[in-house]
Length: 322
Image (cartoon, rainbow, N blue to C red; front, side, top):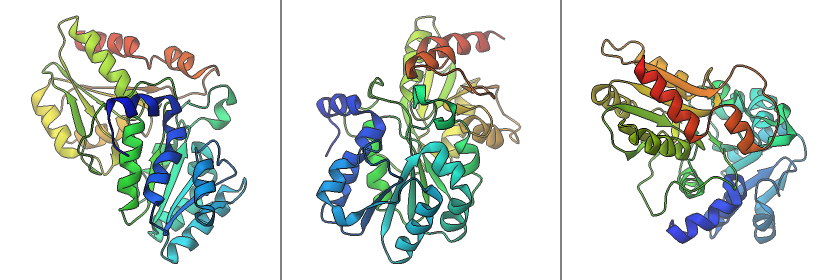
């Protein structure tokens, strides 16, 4: 599988969690050490074809995420490379203690894959939203965290994870209405961000579903004479400090955009790094509010929370005028 314009547009229709299963099929071919686990959400994780193609490499743990992580840890101890999947709040919060002990403390080779993170689960409501998972996962020592920007980057992430020895949290945001960011191949490295657009007035640092919205916002800002650099910070931990150093030196302001609470996520990561700097620049954090939000369709909720390109543009323009 490779990223082409045609493939990227076809994959986008599946959405990141639907396409995740296709990426798993790609890495499992000829690799019997790959194990996919589900908390009775095989279809929601896009793993139905994987289950059919590799029945001996698929484990349904049932609606029991805590047990699933324990079993995943045991399989990892036996030399398997395990991808354990569930909805974001269930794998990050319900199974948080097991993730902390088995993935963090024991440093086992398990990839915890959070499907439907952010507010992607729509009408299922706040019980299924991943509003605070980054704040919990990034506090676990030795945990690598990746939030892919689109389906092409889901493929890149899964491929990189298959060759990565250690615990990882993969956060899948967005759905089939999200347009692709990448239309051709590019260099993906864990811990190294990707600069997608260059500008001298402001640097927008985004992750997951908000990368495309930030690119849209940058286009709208350009119509107002504001040129923005846009960085895809796909790896939340370890954070690309070099990219932030360049941003602080090259632009007079930094904006972070994420489909996560403004407490404890990407914005907090950037603030924690930039705060001690003597040459720090103003920082605007755009994300979900510190509250449970009104439920609706995914795009409607993004609009209501000011996370579409038009609203992001307005917020940034107003911030730069201060």
